[in-house]
Length: 83
Image (cartoon, rainbow, N blue to C red; front, side, top):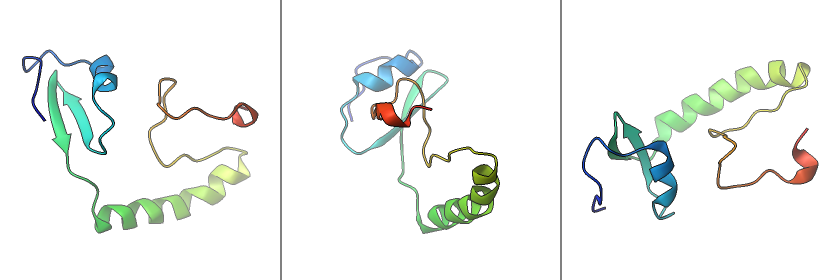
């Protein structure tokens, strides 16, 4: 991807102006990085961690999301799922 901003000037808000092309990006100290996709080891660790946490979270009446969730996430929560 061609950077259109000087290094060190990228912000969190700039992430939302990038195309939704399936690539993963992070901004660290104002510099844009394309991140590699998670591998099988990462996926295995995540699933094992979820298996450990889910019974605890469920017993407390909580919900577990498998990705970072912010108020500005691109995928909205359905209105019947907000509480």
